[in-house]
Amino acid sequence: MRRRVLALLRGWRHGLADEIWFEEVVNLAPVSRDLLPGADVEDCRRFFAFTGTHPDELPDGAWAVKEWRRRVEPRTTDDGWRVAELARAIYNARKDDPRFVVPAGLDPIDLPVTKLERSVHLWQQGSRLYRGAENNAPSAGSLLGIVSSSNDRIQVEALGAAETFWAAGRAPSWAGD
Image (cartoon, rainbow, N blue to C red):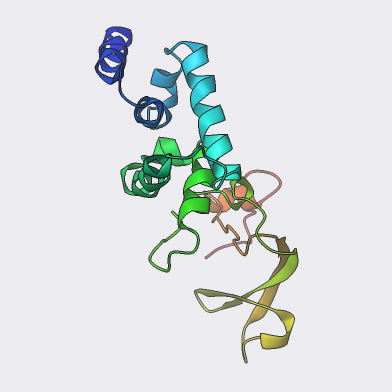
Protein backbone atom coordinates (compact mmCIF):
# COMPACT_ATOMS: atom_id res chain seq x y z
CA MET A 1 0.00 0.00 0.00
CA ARG A 2 2.78 2.43 0.92
CA ARG A 3 4.49 1.83 -2.42
CA ARG A 4 1.24 2.70 -4.25
CA VAL A 5 0.79 5.89 -2.24
CA LEU A 6 4.36 6.93 -3.07
CA ALA A 7 3.75 6.21 -6.78
CA LEU A 8 0.61 8.36 -6.63
CA LEU A 9 2.50 11.17 -4.91
CA ARG A 10 5.27 10.95 -7.52
CA GLY A 11 2.64 11.17 -10.28
CA TRP A 12 1.19 14.33 -8.75
CA ARG A 13 4.65 15.91 -8.71
CA HIS A 14 5.47 14.83 -12.29
CA GLY A 15 5.78 17.86 -14.52
CA LEU A 16 6.63 20.21 -11.66
CA ALA A 17 10.15 21.42 -10.98
CA ASP A 18 12.42 18.58 -9.82
CA GLU A 19 13.10 20.27 -6.50
CA ILE A 20 9.43 19.89 -5.52
CA TRP A 21 9.71 16.09 -5.80
CA PHE A 22 13.14 16.14 -4.14
CA GLU A 23 11.68 17.94 -1.14
CA GLU A 24 9.04 15.21 -0.85
CA VAL A 25 11.70 12.48 -1.11
CA VAL A 26 14.06 13.93 1.47
CA ASN A 27 11.30 14.47 4.06
CA LEU A 28 10.06 10.87 3.92
CA ALA A 29 10.80 8.47 6.75
CA PRO A 30 13.71 6.21 5.75
CA VAL A 31 11.41 3.17 5.56
CA SER A 32 9.33 4.96 2.90
CA ARG A 33 12.32 6.48 1.13
CA ASP A 34 13.75 2.98 0.72
CA LEU A 35 10.67 2.01 -1.34
CA LEU A 36 11.43 4.63 -4.02
CA PRO A 37 13.55 3.97 -7.09
CA GLY A 38 17.20 4.38 -6.12
CA ALA A 39 17.71 6.90 -8.92
CA ASP A 40 15.13 9.26 -7.36
CA VAL A 41 16.86 9.18 -3.99
CA GLU A 42 20.31 9.58 -5.53
CA ASP A 43 19.16 12.48 -7.76
CA CYS A 44 17.65 14.12 -4.68
CA ARG A 45 20.88 13.82 -2.69
CA ARG A 46 22.97 15.11 -5.62
CA PHE A 47 20.64 18.07 -6.07
CA PHE A 48 20.87 19.14 -2.43
CA ALA A 49 24.60 18.44 -2.31
CA PHE A 50 25.17 20.70 -5.32
CA THR A 51 22.92 23.53 -4.13
CA GLY A 52 24.46 23.31 -0.67
CA THR A 53 28.07 23.51 -1.84
CA HIS A 54 27.58 25.77 -4.90
CA PRO A 55 24.79 28.17 -3.89
CA ASP A 56 25.90 30.88 -6.31
CA GLU A 57 26.55 28.58 -9.27
CA LEU A 58 22.96 27.83 -10.17
CA PRO A 59 22.19 28.67 -13.80
CA ASP A 60 20.79 32.04 -14.84
CA GLY A 61 17.09 32.26 -14.13
CA ALA A 62 17.42 29.93 -11.13
CA TRP A 63 16.43 32.65 -8.67
CA ALA A 64 13.27 30.67 -7.98
CA VAL A 65 15.37 27.68 -6.83
CA LYS A 66 17.42 29.92 -4.54
CA GLU A 67 14.29 31.48 -3.07
CA TRP A 68 12.58 28.09 -2.75
CA ARG A 69 15.58 26.75 -0.82
CA ARG A 70 15.05 29.46 1.81
CA ARG A 71 11.44 28.32 2.25
CA VAL A 72 12.30 24.63 2.58
CA GLU A 73 13.56 24.92 6.15
CA PRO A 74 10.23 25.44 7.95
CA ARG A 75 8.72 22.47 6.07
CA THR A 76 11.61 20.10 6.78
CA THR A 77 10.75 17.05 8.89
CA ASP A 78 13.01 15.45 11.48
CA ASP A 79 13.79 12.77 8.89
CA GLY A 80 14.70 15.47 6.38
CA TRP A 81 17.15 17.11 8.79
CA ARG A 82 18.94 13.76 9.10
CA VAL A 83 19.85 13.88 5.39
CA ALA A 84 23.22 15.61 5.46
CA GLU A 85 22.93 17.06 1.94
CA LEU A 86 19.66 18.83 2.78
CA ALA A 87 20.94 20.03 6.15
CA ARG A 88 23.99 21.61 4.49
CA ALA A 89 21.90 23.23 1.74
CA ILE A 90 19.49 24.82 4.21
CA TYR A 91 22.30 25.86 6.54
CA ASN A 92 24.17 27.54 3.67
CA ALA A 93 21.03 29.31 2.51
CA ARG A 94 20.05 30.57 5.96
CA LYS A 95 23.31 30.83 7.96
CA ASP A 96 23.49 34.63 7.64
CA ASP A 97 19.85 35.10 8.67
CA PRO A 98 19.80 36.16 12.34
CA ARG A 99 16.34 34.58 12.72
CA PHE A 100 17.58 31.13 11.66
CA VAL A 101 17.86 28.65 14.52
CA VAL A 102 19.76 25.45 13.81
CA PRO A 103 17.51 22.54 14.83
CA ALA A 104 18.60 20.80 18.03
CA GLY A 105 18.79 17.39 16.36
CA LEU A 106 21.11 18.52 13.57
CA ASP A 107 24.56 17.00 13.95
CA PRO A 108 27.25 19.70 13.53
CA ILE A 109 29.37 17.19 11.61
CA ASP A 110 26.84 17.53 8.77
CA LEU A 111 27.37 21.29 8.51
CA PRO A 112 29.99 22.81 6.25
CA VAL A 113 33.26 24.26 7.51
CA THR A 114 32.74 28.00 7.86
CA LYS A 115 35.66 29.08 10.04
CA LEU A 116 39.12 28.03 11.07
CA GLU A 117 39.05 25.25 13.63
CA ARG A 118 39.10 26.59 17.16
CA SER A 119 38.82 25.22 20.67
CA VAL A 120 35.54 25.49 22.52
CA HIS A 121 35.65 25.08 26.29
CA LEU A 122 32.68 23.58 28.12
CA TRP A 123 32.00 24.37 31.78
CA GLN A 124 29.30 23.19 34.13
CA GLN A 125 27.96 25.21 37.02
CA GLY A 126 25.11 23.48 38.83
CA SER A 127 22.66 22.24 36.23
CA ARG A 128 23.83 24.73 33.56
CA LEU A 129 26.32 24.19 30.77
CA TYR A 130 28.41 27.07 29.43
CA ARG A 131 30.63 27.34 26.38
CA GLY A 132 33.38 29.76 25.56
CA ALA A 133 37.08 30.20 24.99
CA GLU A 134 39.85 29.72 27.53
CA ASN A 135 40.18 33.46 28.06
CA ASN A 136 36.49 33.97 29.00
CA ALA A 137 36.02 31.27 31.61
CA PRO A 138 33.11 31.71 34.00
CA SER A 139 33.94 32.86 37.52
CA ALA A 140 32.70 29.56 38.97
CA GLY A 141 32.09 26.06 37.73
CA SER A 142 34.09 23.11 36.48
CA LEU A 143 35.77 22.66 33.12
CA LEU A 144 34.20 19.56 31.54
CA GLY A 145 36.21 19.43 28.37
CA ILE A 146 37.66 21.13 25.34
CA VAL A 147 36.32 20.31 21.87
CA SER A 148 37.21 21.61 18.43
CA SER A 149 34.76 23.18 15.98
CA SER A 150 35.19 24.50 12.46
CA ASN A 151 31.63 25.77 12.07
CA ASP A 152 31.06 27.25 15.55
CA ARG A 153 28.55 24.50 16.38
CA ILE A 154 28.88 21.78 18.99
CA GLN A 155 26.49 19.06 20.08
CA VAL A 156 26.15 17.85 23.64
CA GLU A 157 23.93 14.91 24.48
CA ALA A 158 23.04 13.38 27.82
CA LEU A 159 23.65 9.71 28.37
CA GLY A 160 20.49 7.62 28.31
CA ALA A 161 20.32 5.96 31.69
CA ALA A 162 22.70 6.37 34.61
CA GLU A 163 23.72 2.75 34.13
CA THR A 164 25.36 3.55 30.76
CA PHE A 165 28.07 5.38 32.70
CA TRP A 166 29.34 2.26 34.46
CA ALA A 167 31.60 -0.25 32.70
CA ALA A 168 29.63 -3.18 34.15
CA GLY A 169 26.38 -1.72 32.80
CA ARG A 170 24.97 -1.02 36.28
CA ALA A 171 25.90 1.17 39.23
CA PRO A 172 27.87 -0.47 42.06
CA SER A 173 26.13 -0.82 45.40
CA TRP A 174 28.05 2.08 46.94
CA ALA A 175 26.91 4.56 44.25
CA GLY A 176 23.62 6.34 44.75
CA ASP A 177 21.85 9.54 43.97
